[in-house]
Length: 160
Image (cartoon, rainbow, N blue to C red):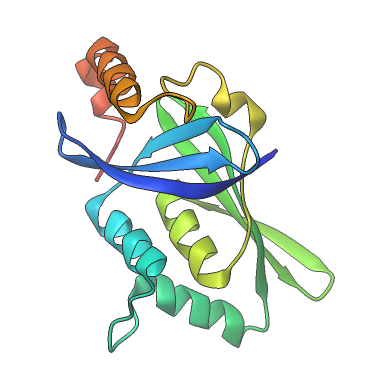
């Protein structure tokens, strides 16, 4: 497992889909994950430290977890199947740890709100189209090439 942080939020101009880009802590590898607009807004709001008057879904989940005297131990982006990323949120209560299947975008939004670490399985960094060592222009070009090589069926696996 590799610990990561949210490095950037971007829009894939070709598909008008938000992309959260995770970067390994203490390293240069990055992992782009296409996400939904609502989750991108939730992540952006937390990164900016903005709050609504009433709790949004991820704030509500945080409140429920705290109300149950549990904590978010960690979030793990654990696998990629058929071009869809999978994640687990690990909750701890007393001596028990439970892994809950979740979308990476929701997991990231919850991890940010609970100040919990985010990890990515090592194998998910293999064959990634961009690196943070590249200039922004080269990153954009590399990501565009990667997207050009995807088939239309691949785009169907990034639900909004």
